[in-house]
Length: 316
Image (tube, rainbow, N blue to C red; front, side, top):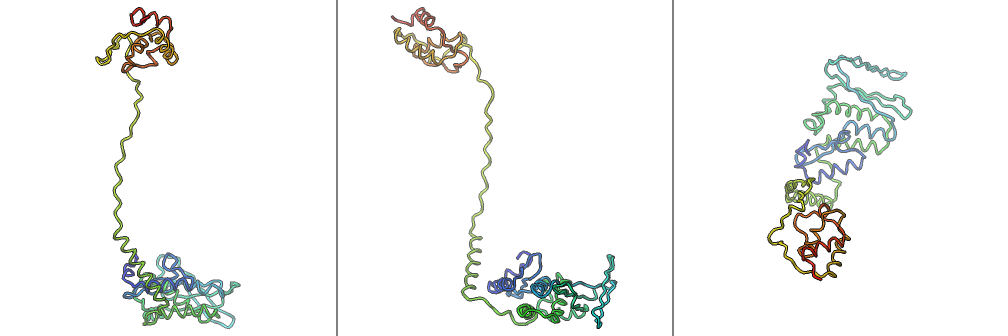
């Protein structure tokens, strides 16, 4: 559709006919192979067979290969039909300037690889065929003239080859479609046409109503965890805030021992833990910015008890 925007104006019935024609004859529609072209005539899409499409039809059963080439003015070329066979010579001139195109030929080889026929056409004969084609001024005749010339000579020479009935009918049908002034016979059912038209309209409506994709949100800034160690506050420099001011509260020895033993089980072992345990025994909890691993110890139970008695924080 992008290369041939005029096809967008063609009816769904004619496009469906082109597709069914390609499937029926086993030809590739469009693409780079060039077996079958879809050409628009007004609002009607028409299947026009290409050179490689003709070769595909001719080589399915009877022939091994079909070879068509263009002859230029400065090439060496000779073709004679003699009693003993075919006297054929074509030597292309190895130069950028081979002169204008003067003719085209096709050679046909049977299943054993034997050359059985050569068909030759002059350029004027090719142009005469082109003028009778509905696609003479559009499609492959304009963009691929030499390929269309090879197709023309390959089809003409096929008349001298004993082909299967289905191949002969396929080539005749291709000629009827390309050279008849009437539109191709519609082989589609009304139900199929209605389905194609409905689906086409549904796709168009879906594309119109399809919401545009919202722009993705900007990525959140990556949070890199800080590797800096928290600032350490030495135990002898720590000043608790006013709301955490230590107030002496009497603690019985039995209760203290139980609480100190619980504390000892979880504290590390160094020499600066007496103050922390004293504060904990008072019920004031852990001061802010206190680093247990650095500034709390398990100590010795008797030493802690003596310390608390000395500070009159322990009642017997």
